[in-house]
Length: 92
Image (cartoon, rainbow, N blue to C red; front, side, top):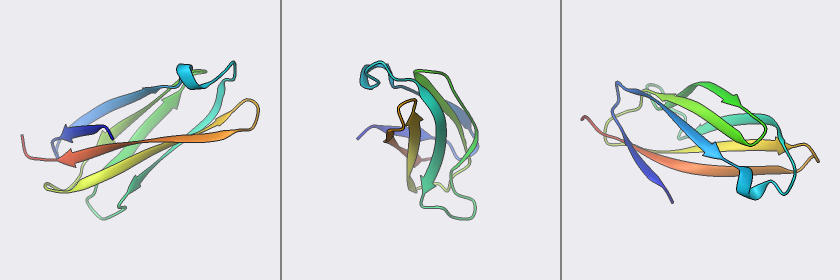
């Protein structure tokens, strides 16, 4: 589990390099989700992807809360995979 600290007022980008897992495939779609999904909680406000890399911009969050952010990708051969990262929101 990777844990990142984020200020509730900050906006930060996080990227995932998928190249080691693709076995010759490319990413053709990417989506992001946050758990828990709550008012004022952490949100992915923008995202992008390239053939071997995805990125998302995280914003907000309630101080003292832990969030799981999951990136799900669809590969060129139709496989679907996902990776999760964790953010703890703290006043900094």
